[in-house]
Length: 396
Image 1 (cartoon, rainbow, N blue to C red):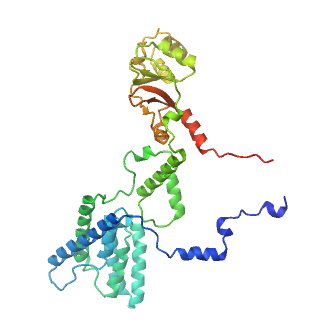
Image 2 (cartoon, rainbow, N blue to C red; image 1 turned 90 degrees about the vertical axis):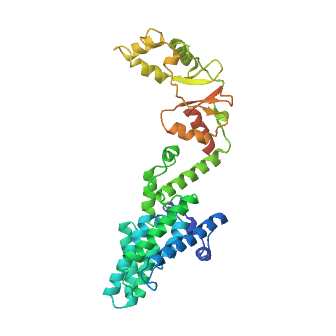
């Protein structure tokens, strides 16, 4: 290979584009993207915004001492769009709405009093409001707009904090909580963690530290909560996993026929069957073929550690030969809480059951709840390997 090619950088997609194609792609970014919501959701948003502003306006005008006085802040319309249209947004939560609006009013009042030039005061007020919103965790874009309004209209923002600002915001927040609850939206929306049980359900796709590292590398404000982003990524990963496996089900990978024992079988017989068939676990079934538990080699070892103070080898020998001080029937040794799966269960649904820990064998039952097979971690890994393997061709 020529020396000039040994250290040449790989050709990337961006580098392979012509200047014309890069300009075309840049110009396409000005075109509107699909919002991906239905007409029903758009109607819900519109009605909510209108009702919120109407109720806030009526109550604020009634509360005002002087009819001609200012009874509603102009930024409330933009705030209503966030509260009713995007209730899951971090920018629409109660603290950003209250803190961002009040902070911007105070900053606008200070800039108006200290900076004589209106244009400069307006720029400083908006920029300083945004700068302070970040560490105070109250980023609310309509608030920055109100800072500019205070400067441009030469309003004393300090006197407006209690009324109409806080009054307007409080009424609008109450309206948002009630309306979103009635229309099936959670508000305030969870921002910090996944719903209970969801993390363990999807555990294994990626860790929380991976998402933290990605967000730190991205280093930009996202209009989505961390919890929602994590949930969406997990669901996307699950969908991709499901697509790769297609309709692969437990019946396609399970081991059958399966060796099983009844609850009244002795420890010695169960141990001998496992040794003879080279299996590490046996389903325990009733006379009708229904699964009532599972007995494994680890159960024998665990029980042996509870017997007389002898060596583990001696305890285990006594246990499987029936000479142990403990009862010698399988029903006294088995795990009665063993989960079972249907034979038509999708393979993707087995992943969280195995990855949760403590589960290495899953009995497979028919629609009549009778044992038809068993799925092990090895079976699942073998199926995973076959699904994601890429055929390779050897060079001639």
